[in-house]
Image (cartoon, rainbow, N blue to C red):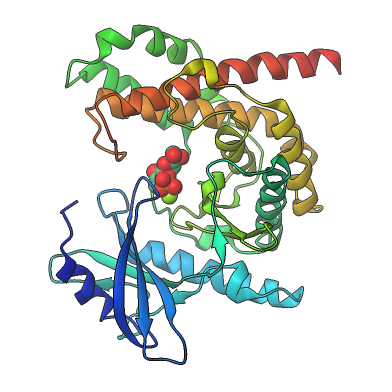
Length: 361
Ligand code: GN1
Ligand code: MG
């Protein structure tokens, strides 16, 4: 992706139906994929803010289809939220159309942009201040699943084909090991072995009878907005990967990220542990939020989903490291390797924990 200049941002901002003139545009550096800016406009009754994002088209090849998913799902959610007396302006994202009425704007350099209302008085966490907040995020993701249970999943575009197809991720990983284009494989033999020994995770969902539902596909805690005053989980954000998928993967992805005692890129592995108490808090919240949406098989498979997606994330991080860091944004040369190692550590600990659970029950 090309570097952005201030004039790109101003030009893009001018193409959206904003209430007022942009006064300031500030960079927001969260997220590994898109570029995010916060636009403050003045001119209307009070100051108002918007989120302006350049969609990463190296990752999302069909941004118009992606936005069609987002518009469809957020409109559906808005109706459901109204039905239970919630506030759709705060509990889901609101897409701001471009001046020509489309959901995204393509500039002369081929960049794709979209805008959302900024939801004020919120914050997001990599680590919650209180463990209960992680449980609440579980309830929010469960509710998200429940509210969307009747959305026709088959009408959604695959914004990234085979995104959580672990078998395909495994094949891609083996290809990266094989090609080893930047000569990194020799130094990570132990990690490669850990992952290849566990290829059964890659095959586990190949013949499942579980239903493909509307999934978020990126349920990490940092994709939840919390209300600053009540500190309650409020809104699920980052809807780029909404696609049909298995609910156990959405559950597991949240666990992978949030039930770890350390950051996803912690260098000191002694600090990285799978926290079963956090897992249980999330599980309780998630089941509550889902209501009666899940089948017995899905519920039974939730721990397995946690292992599979964490394993898959390890494949993805280590694969990207081997390919020379072509996908994830990185801050330093070993960043993806450190990320892969935390995931490997978590898979190992989840295996211990869940074997234990299954043997005592
Ligand atoms: C990416 O966009 P962001 O940072 O929320 C990635 C997820 C990974 C995550 C790991 C489109 O998410 O799949 O789980 O990094 N998103 C995409 O932190 O690849
Ligand atoms: Mg994302």
